[in-house]
Every structure is written in C-alpha cells, then in structure tokens.
Length: 62
Image (cartoon, rainbow, N blue to C red):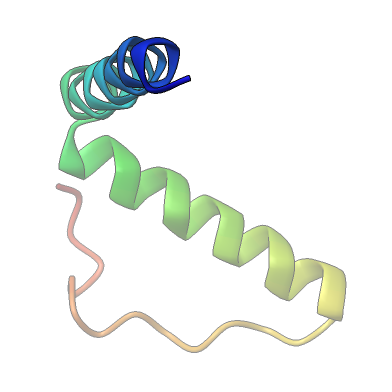
C-alpha cells in the first residue's frame, strides 16, 4: 500500500503547488483586490445597507 500511496501523494502535492503558482500568475494583487471590492459591494447591495467609504485608497484609481 505504501508503494502506491507515495506516488499518489507526490502527484497531488505537485498539482496543488502548480495551482498556487497559476493563481499568482493570472490574478495579480491589484486585480484580486479589485475583484474583492466588487464582491463586497455586491454583498452590501444584497443586504440593503450602503458600504462605508473606503478611506484607504482616497478614491483615486490604481
């Protein structure tokens, strides 16, 4: 069983590692932050409560 389990775990870890690299390449920090802001705004709209103004960015485009 150990002879089968070790290669399976190695392949699984390789896939997870490559997935992490893919996310970092295709979703840079600025795009991820913009997507997160959009999702948060959508959640606030669903709740019916306006979101607080974002003072961190000063409203300036990035």
